[in-house]
Length: 313
View 1 (cartoon, one colour):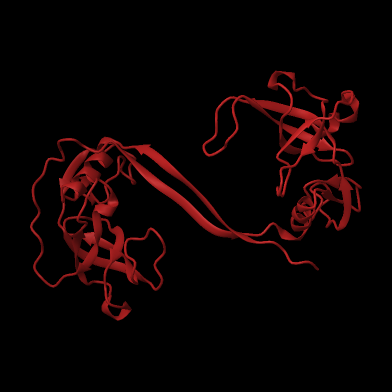
View 2 (view 1 turned 120 degrees about the vertical axis):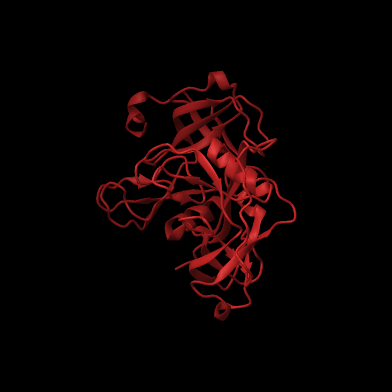
């Protein structure tokens, strides 16, 4: 059995969100070295603050300051910090109930080792040197043996409040396309398109999945298809994608390769975008060293009859 391909893959995007008045005050307070909670009608102080009481669902806006010291309620040791975590040396994740609060805040505790961490230990905030109005303005917590910190009274109103944040979402993982798609990708490197036939319904799937999505049985019989095919459906793209060097408008289409029972997608070139149509016969165009077709262009053949591809729409 040939080696199965695998490669590192990173998916990331910046997530921009606006803040409610309560969360705006909380994050702006961190920038100013103030920690704010919100008080419920029955007297509980919630930190971090939320807009609605989690018990009664009542809207709450009564902001109150809490202390910069607190007590660890539970913890877990992080032996190997990852990219983007608060500390680059081993640390403890802790839930800290700040003095004056009735709920706990999750953050990092800078400690020399797991033996130095315990439930019930006292800790205090270590502020980041540069603060922008984000949870990272608390650099971490640190062990503390002194007296409780005094709570600085504050109304929760600030000059130049933070109204929005950008959270960088990122996922790093190793992707493997599996046996069937490895064979498909290797064939593309040879400028061939290979699918697999279902032993039950006899349909040929391109790209192959390793199993028939209709019958649920494994597929193994390889079938070479194409290289030409038929446009079944298409769309005109009018918004330029970031890092994609293609002028708009252009056409992206579903293409049923000859001999396949599943349409794959590809860009259509070599023809004005407004002349692309269902039934258009196309063939792949390869670039030097390319491992997959750059785009598909018209073959010059007559359009395919609708009856020949209607089941592949």
